[in-house]
Image 1 (spheres, one colour):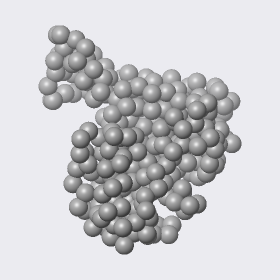
Image 2: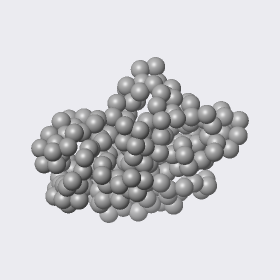
Image 3: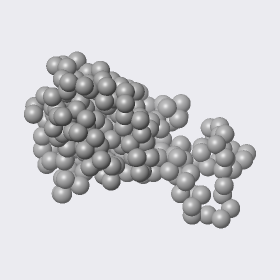
Image 4: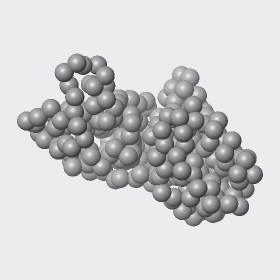
Length: 244
């Protein structure tokens, strides 16, 4: 029994792996200075022999490791992106600087396709990564997610202030909708750009996988054939844990 932990910028996703079976738990929202309510997670993981962690919230990583190890009395392995592992070879010159979630998402995606693929993961930030048929990562892109775009406009301008109630519009008639719709359309445009140029780059078809907490807002705008696979990082963690 293994505990799989995907600590992102705003949510902790987790699962329990028993052999080849993975039981996905409910995501836990957190803030920059706290982990949120871990009681359900810790209760479900009682008896785990190890924990396997991917984290992009680096300031919270030591706290999560301490809580898990002190409560469950099991060692925690923290993933650092390598140059090559588990069927994926990183494009980064300094591979350890590639986000662990991005590498593990590619690991989780690769067994599900026979050819090249593109992953778009929209959360606080949106990342896009392209992988060829041989498992070579060809590089990626990072932009703010739609919520972060809205916050950036709040911080960087004197006249743009928005509320919480928004609607998606092709051309908005109020500032709230204009900011939200603009951010969503920008993210979708980047996905389309990456898909088109990725297909040209690999000289053939590319499977598109979509994930991330902000992706539901983008899905109505995406007209490229795709699959929504929200737990790719956990799938990658399971593969890593299975290989030790």
